[in-house]
Length: 316
Image (cartoon, rainbow, N blue to C red):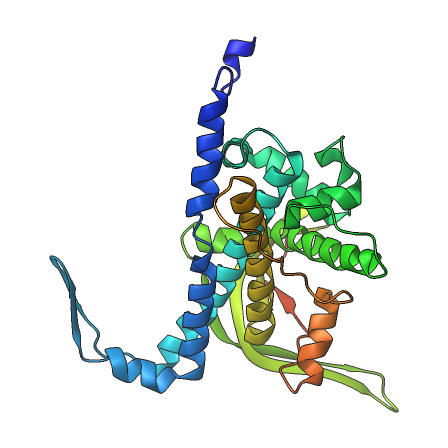
């Protein structure tokens, strides 16, 4: 029955006001501010410690002091914050993209009405490059460009390259968010740590090919299927700070695109030229760009270590 629809009989004026409030007050600057704070901690760790160490702070009735703050703790916390910020930014971007793509009456309501099941179904489909299910009234290119920019882009010589780049970033967000082990480790008990880790692998004998990497790793537990049985394992994710911070910057800007489009549509602000990653710029290109520029090698993202189990004997 219609009366069981939670949006049934909401007035047009109420829907307009909700949309206007959502886009007018969305805290886009949050991700850029956190991004800058983390970079500052990594780049100026000693200055940061000197600014807060041994000093008392107070906010109204709350008082605090920072004693015995070590550089190691600051750097470890900053690297945890990078992953946390990245996952948070990805999810905010992805959920708003889905809401805008559907073009329902209110994006704010649409985001709140998205169930966990629907969210994971969307991740599965979009990670495979499936977009047309989101809106039967637009083709795939229109869904992508309207959702991210608020307009249908002109089909010039760069059109297909722009679509390719936009699509690659949306698919990458969906694929990353499907790896829920890291997300759950943050949200459910902070069951992770930053440690030193790595591996060495040699292939061949006469002219051996050697792979090795040792660096800071984010460690959390995951389940793996082996011979029909679930087993625990350690997932070690290299803290490629430069790579992740670059992606946060890109997704925060794409998120900002969508908010600016909403502000323009609801007469809150003038039209803002959208941020578009370079026409041929995908996350694969980002990896190469960082490495070629003398940054850290991001080719090795993570590795898994099985836990030790007693030998299992199936007694009949």
